[in-house]
Amino acid sequence: MPREWIRMTAVWLVTLACAFALPIAAVGATGAVSSLAGELFASITGTLAPRDADGRTNVLLLGVGDSEHTAADLTDAIVVASMEPTSRSLVLFSIPRDLYLTDSTRMAPGKINGLYSIRKRAHRKEGLTATGASLLAMRDFADELEERLDIPIHGVMKMDFIGFERMIDMVGGVDVTVPKTITDDTYPVEEGELGVFAIEAGQQHLDGKTALRYARSRHSTSDFDRSARQQQILSALMAKTRPRDVMESVHLFDGILDALRGHVEWTFLPSDLWGLAGTAAGIDRDRIITMHLSTKTGGDRSEAAPGGLVYPPPPGVAGSGSVLLPVSLTDDVSDWGQIRSLASLLFSHRDLYLTRPTVTITHAPKAKIQAQRLRNELLRYGFTVAKAEKGPESLDMLSFLNVRGGSPSSARLAAQLSGVPFSWRSDVRSASGTEIRFSLGEEYRFVPFERRLFPQS
Image 1 (cartoon, helix red, strand yellow):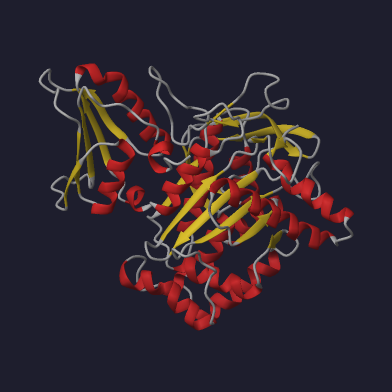
Image 2: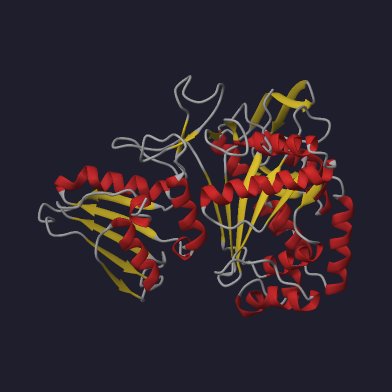
């Protein structure tokens, strides 16, 4: 039976940082003290995390089963985590395990969650040890995503089921509010054995095993519900951190590594782990951006969802069973152009997301379809469109964009994505924060964001 692992394996990175690094800035979770926490920790340990030219650290996080599970080397959690010290932010971008690779140079056509396993077996045949083959296979996976997303990946971390359970238990469990009762009659309680997993709606305290089941259960709810539950666990883990002094933090770090030994692997140098913790120490808990790809792509009469850039192809188009392909502006089923554009916005232009803008669209009567296409594109790229409606009959002037709040660079980016001129004001009188208002005249013609961002492609 196919397994689901926690897409939000990023708890490994974030929880480690929170458990022994973030509390160094115990004076406050925000403000100047928080922004300097990473540099303070780095000065204590004498290390910095590897960074790209823009100061970001990108880590590939992989989640697998354990030795008791069939096909334990399938990476059913694939998350790119990008930390940016300047904005004290973290982006978590999940790649679905069923995304089909048709043209990889590292494996035959197949699901992306098989890449690590295939490369590990290949390296073992070359005579490498199990550990050496695993580390090279992890790096192979990172190289694959580097090419497809056009970003540097500085290292890889991999955790199994047992490691996740131990991480939850080490912080004393987590508290979550279950939005609706779950009864999964076909949960794999043991390898080869199905049982019942049930949890009531309301406030619940979860130990490691229950948290794992809560995150993995998939037969009674949708994939989108499961992703939301995984985000709940991440937030709950963040909330469990407690202030510690430096020496206590060092001892806790050693204890965590000892408890997870054999269940976690990484390609980083040992000193890099301290640097990663130092970078994560400055992350503001309110500045975490999450995104996972989905099949709700939308259309002229249907609504898109965030990450709606993949689709299940007709039988025989790619492989067999449950597979996904990237939505492409061309006929090429291997074209990751739109996924790459989404990653570019999330990682390189995250300021636009961090302001959490309120977006409204008003359109001329004859621009209804064009407005719907712009609205769906904004939704696919993770923005919230509060309102899209027809304007007065007199709205036939040229299109324009009005931005209040945020920064001029964010306003320019919104104008670039939409293709309309803009005006920007720094003052925000509304309590809702940054406001982006599109007014679309009859002449407006929608162009996909990918072509706006990468016209040469």
